[in-house]
Every structure is written in structure tokens, then in C-alpha cells.
Length: 240
Image (cartoon, rainbow, N blue to C red; front, side):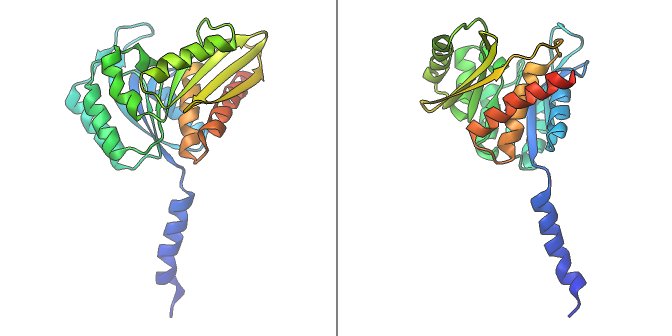
């Protein structure tokens, strides 16, 4: 028997197994490329993932007022992205889109690895509740927290809203950078040295995208959070 026809499907299966994992990113389309879904796509490619995007709104210039996309246009993009079976989903700025509809689509068709960016917490509590209930992890910026109890208080407030896991990221404590993960009550602290480097626009958002990328690659939440913190350090060292 000839080997070609029989071998072709096997090669196809191997190619599929080795294909970069797909990550769906939902958020704003910024006119600049340092933030929003364009920047997310660059991070995902950098981490050997394949991005697919669904834009919720247009931000015409830095600091500009978001202009929501028509719901039908956004809905088509979201349904199309989910149809490609992403391994992880990153949810960022939602503007005026229907959060309950988004949550229903994610619940029916998205994998468990749903990462909520800090922008979601800017929504009123009632609006964000359906997404918090679905999320694998919610990322929160440490803000003015000056110690580990402060990070614990931040995580506790978000977990009280129904989040399974909360990653408080970017706390600057005594010359160190601390991320604290509370996963169903199990706490892991990630401690790294502070890197003195010029500010890189959009780097905090890239941290969230890196977390989604590593979850898509099959890492545990602890390992993905550690890798995302490490990715930020790499970007700071290379200056972009």
C-alpha cells in the first residue's frame, strides 16, 4: 500500500497538535498600537500564540473618549472568534456592549481559561457580576497597597463578588515587585527585584495578556502568573 495518502492525515494531526494555541482578546481598538487589542495581538505573537480579536470600541487617540462599535458588528466578531475554539480568552475594556450577552456566549463556547483585565472592575458591580462568575482569574492592579495585608484586602473584596481567583499585580514594596495570587483561598506570592528602566506604555496590560497566553499553553494558574511576571521583566530589560 502507498504511504502518501495514509500518511497525510497523520501529518495533519501532528501539525494541529504543534500549532500555536489560539487566544481570543476582547477590548478596545486604540488608534495607537501601545494598548488595546492591537498590543494584545503583538504580545500573543511574541509568546508564540495565535491571536483573534473582537473590538468593543474605538479609542481615537490617547485619553480620548471611547466610541462603541455597533453591537451587531462586535457580536459578529466575538462569535467568529469563539468559533475558532480559543484556548484562552482575555477580556478588557467593554464600553457599552451587552455584558450579559458576552457572558452567555463565553459560558457556552469559551474554555475555562477566561482572564479578566482590571478594566472590567471599573464596571458597576451588577454589570461585571456575570463575568466574575465565569472568570478563571481576575487581575487587579495593586495601586497604593504598601504591604501584603493591603493586597489581601484587595483580593478579598473581589473574591467576595464571586471571583474564583484574584491576581493582585505590580505592588512596589521595599524595592521589590510583588504579585499576590489568591486561588480559591490558596495564596502564592511572586517576588522579583525592581528593574530601573524607562516606562514602557501598555506594559501593565501586556502582563494580563501574557497570563492568558501561558494559560492557553496549558500552564497551571500559578505557573502562568509566574511566567507573566517574568515576561514583564524581559520587556523592561529589552526596553520595549
